[in-house]
Image 1 (spheres, rainbow, N blue to C red):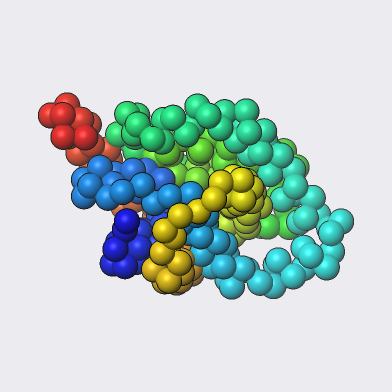
Image 2 (cartoon, helix red, strand yellow; image 1 turned 120 degrees about the horizontal axis):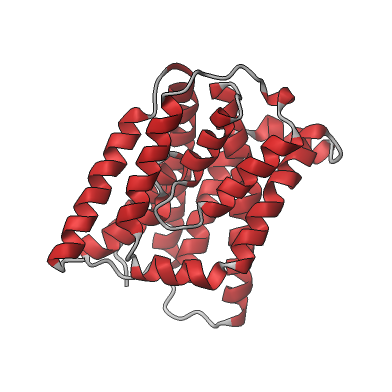
Length: 260
C-alpha cells in the first residue's frame, strides 16, 4: 500500500503534469519504474482525475457557468465537437492504450515526439485568432489530437495547445481552449473508471491518504494552469521540449541497460 507521502507526491505529479505539456501518464509510469512505487489503483487514479477536474473548475468557473447556462452557445457546441473524436479514439483503442501504459515500452519515444511537437510549433509565427473566432474545423482537429494524446507519454495539453497554435489561434486563447476541452475528457475518463469501481468491491482503501493526494493534485493543477496561461502568453514552450527530450533519452538508456 502506498504511504501518505507517496500519495501526496503522486498527487502533485498528476496535478502539475496534467496541465504542463510534459505528460502526466508518462511521468507516473516513469516514477513507478524508477522508485518501485506500486500501481496507484483504480480508485486513487479516479480521485486524482477528480483533483485535476477541481482545478479546471476553479480557474474556469465563469466559462463553465456560461456553458451550463447557455447549452446551445457556440462555445458549448465547440466543446461538444472537440470531445467527439476524443471519445471515439478513447473507446475504440482503450485496451491497446492500457496495455502500452502498463508496459511503458514506448514512453521514451513518445517523450521525444512530444518535444519535437513543442519545439516545432514554437518556431512558427504566432496566431491572432481569439477564442470567439475558433470554428468547428478547429475544434474537430484539436479534439482529434487530444484523442491521440491517450498514448502515455504524449502530452495532452502539449498536443492540443500545439494544434491550436497550428490553426492560428492566439497563444493565451489556445491554452484556455485546451484546458476547457480537457474538462469533458477528464470527466469522461473519471466516469468510466467510476463504473468499473462500482462493479468491483474495494479492499483496504486508504481513503484519508487518497483524499490528501487528491487535494495535492487539485492545488498543483490550479497553479499549473495559471502558470501555463501566463507562460504561453508571454514566453515559450521550448524549455519543456528540452526537458522531455532529456527524459525520453534517459528512459531509452535505462531500457537499453535493462533497468526499466
